[in-house]
Length: 161
Image (tube, rainbow, N blue to C red):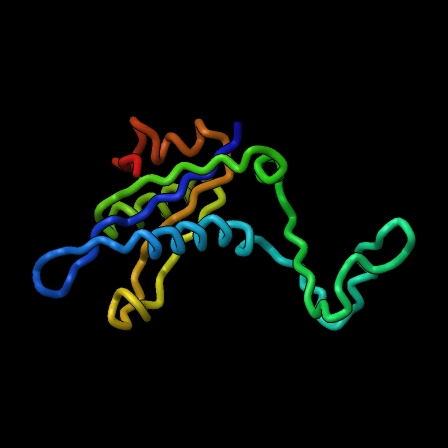
């Protein structure tokens, strides 16, 4: 079964020599951003000003899109990603404490040729205006490929959240 792993940074400097963790809702938002960004970072074909019905029609020839459709995104998917989209959408959320560990996951996934996305929060609510790296998505990919990086004996020590 194809899976996606989202790695969340769990500790952040508080500016006073200590650390803090994110609110549950903020973590959920960052995980959602990472999972989706893997797909949106792929080469997108934008519709622009063309008619959506040029791309897709219902059996009776009417456009499948609302009249106010302004943009259509078509995302090319390799077989593994398509299998995940059409299957179980398996996701595992893991945690690391440091930014260095988070970036190590990101760089290792990129080097391995795995679909990956790094989320950098703009800092409006939690980080006092400072852009901060919060999460990395790895995959969808074959579990054995992801596990080389984030698995129990992988490159980066992660814990199940």
